[in-house]
Length: 195
Image 1: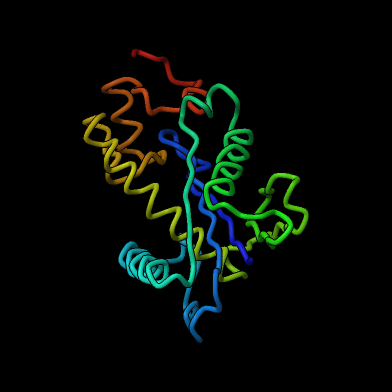
Image 2: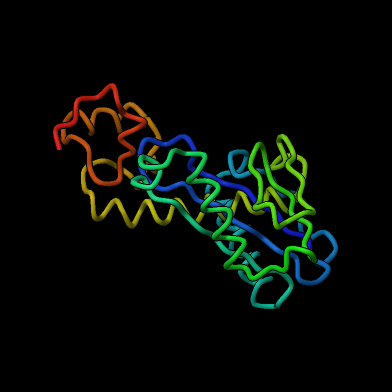
């Protein structure tokens, strides 16, 4: 089983880090992955179009995917690296892979648990390997949707727009409202907490 793994949300000031694992269950139709790019290189509309395509392929039994996240609190308590490892482990457990029968391709510097002997980390994998790019797109769509849900719980920060990244409007909102439970306090140590 070929598996692609990528993460999004390593750098934001708020919200979780999210990992996606995509597994090819059967040979994908010819040209299925043509034009796939890493999530940062695609517009929101293009990401959503890929996501719909993936959902249809999942329904057809061609591929499957899961996402797993680690919260801001977990990131603050254990650090971003441990939070990433936890999310990767949870994603690979949820997708029910047999480590000995899986080839796991991961982006950047992330690694799968040691049980997955046949794994390879590829620098800029989301630009070079289509199944990793697909994982990056799914992770991005899922995390963005989560941040839109959180925007309704923590009003006034604009999470539905910047999805937790450190934009000028986000910093202005923090100065005005203080920190909310979604904020990664370990990423904001220079700001005085008012909440």
